[in-house]
Length: 108
Image (cartoon, rainbow, N blue to C red; front, top):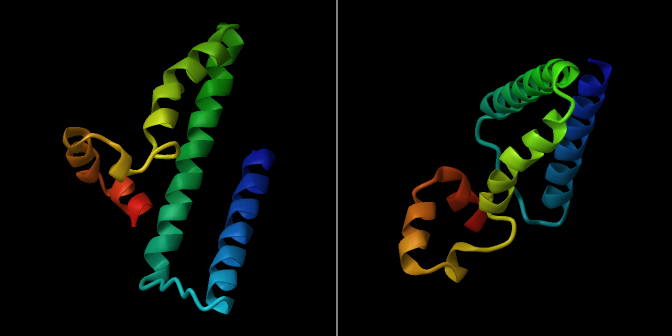
């Protein structure tokens, strides 16, 4: 639980530093509703802490759970939009990915 608290505080500090840095550089990132942003971050923290606790409990009974969990998460990593933009995809896949809110936010 201490590790989750450390990660959460680190994430919030980095978030604040990035927002302030963008404001100082003149590339203002407007946060229209700070309550919704903080609520989303809190939900993310609680969800990821829960997934971590479930993983640690399952790992006690299954020694190879780490390898299985990383293999199950690998498609999410590749589909997250880190390696490509919507413009580099074929038109059919571009339309599919543009329907998701997360992918459209990444592409601006």
